[in-house]
Each structure stands twice: as structure tokens, then as C-alpha cells.
Length: 343
Image (cartoon, rainbow, N blue to C red; front, side, top):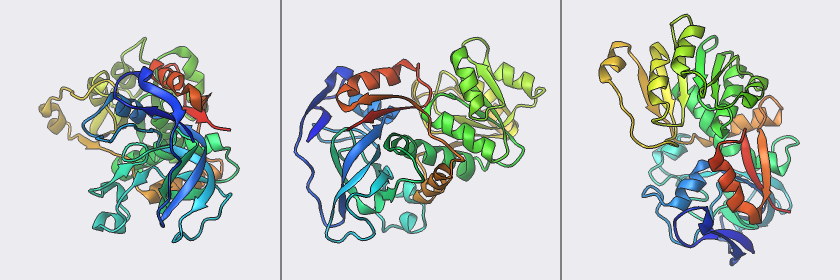
């Protein structure tokens, strides 16, 4: 099969389009003919090399996969060859107390397809059968690949951790990001007043079309000051953050008394400054989030299939142009998801 592979860690130039052996199945696995694979910042971190994601090389990235069932293992039930499917990117052991309780993202052995094993930057990928589900509604393969990782992350952050309620104010950083564009829609659907940020004026209308009530161009004005103005100095109840030190102080200062901040990323770095006196005097809550449960993903998929949430695709690239696709991701000039399409 053809695949995009890196043999050593480094920059985008380390990606190579080449032939690789097709996967061979175990009895509980499914072989997917990949039709689309969406990019995530995880792909960048893995390619650059991260102690959090040790892996044998060469490696094939790609966590967000949609395609057609090509072959099923001997013990697999409920799937048929030729079925249009998407892949749940998170893999737990399926046996521990967390997995049995439906908190699979808390499993000690939890990992991601495309990080713990080969992923979807390829014509074929093998995955556990329990991670394969029918494409919801009438979604294209590109749309089906664009929603899993960001929708399960946004759902977990907004509802399981932040406990967002009807009528609350929420600030979602980065409207054009994967998590951001999905979180805007979810928060609006839940009845919140949605504030969000963009880096250029051309993204304002796009953010509002997803349901944002107030859009702040962070390149022109401090986010925290604008939030305070718009809320009559009160601040917002919830902040959804995935950027890191470049915005951390503004996110904390944007919170109302008793506010909750949930973070799922560190795009601009790993270390932030935090004045604990401000945290306890204002009774703030700060939570870290990693992915979400399978049940949360399937709830989001149902709404996506009904057309109540929609994955936004910025641009598609052929598989062979994965290097250019990752460079486009790093440019931050996108709005929505970047997808590799495979005929």
C-alpha cells in the first residue's frame, strides 16, 4: 500500500510518501480502506518527537479516519465488508474499571490510533473492531473524518468537565481550530452565550455562522479586556482553552468569580504562570482534559448525523501532499479541519 511515513523525528520534510506493507489482521480487528484522514496538532507533535508518545519507527500518523470496511477478523460481529465507517480514535483496554464504567479515556493503557500504532495517512489501516462505527447520516468521507477527535474533545470539555449550563457565558479560544469550531456549535446548541476569538477579520463571519455571539480579533485587542467590556466587568462562566502560554493569562482574567477553565492543549508551549492567590480568592476551577469517552463521541455523532452539528472542512489535500497539509496546519491560516483525501 502507499502511505506517508517518517523514519526519524523532525520537521515536515521528514514525511515520505512510499510503499509500505499492508496490515495483517488479528481475529478482533478490522481492515479499513481509508478514504479520508483529518489532521490534528497531535500529528505535528508526534512527527517532531515527544516523550509522551514513544513509538517504533518508521511510523504512520493519522487519528481521524473514515473509509470502507475491507476485511474483518474472524471474531468480529456486526460489521460487513463494504460498509461506510468512521473510526473512534481512542483505544482503551476494554476491561479495567474505567473502561467498564464508560470512562475509557481514563484507562491506564489508553492511547490513540496514529500515535500508539500506525494511523490513517495510508491507503489501509487496521483498527480494533470496537472502534469502528457507521458513518452518521449522509456525511461524505471527508466530513466523517473531520469530526471524531475534535467533537469528543469539545463535548468532554464543555459538558463533562465544565458542566456548561443553559444561559451561561462561555469563551472558546480559537474559533477556526478543530476543537474551537465544534465547541462553538455545541455551546450554542446547549443555550449558552458564546464568545470566541480569531486572528484575522476574515474569520469573524465564519465564527458567527457557527453560532458565536461575540467574536474578538485577538490580533487587534486584548481578549480579557474585551470580555470584561462585553460582560459589564463580570467575566465569563467558562473558558475552553487549548493554546497555552500565549493566551493563558488572558483566559484566567476573563473568568467570572467561580468560573471554570478547561484546557486540552499546549500549542504555544507547556509552561504557564499562575497566581494562586487569584485562583483561590476568586474561587476558580481549572481542569485538564484529554479526549473523551466513546459514549460522548457517539452522542456527538448522532447530532452530526442529524445536521445539528457540522464539521467544517477548510481544505483537502491528496495523501501524497501530507507535507503541504501539515505546513498549512502550522500556518494557522485555516478555519476548520484539514483533510487528506484518498481516491
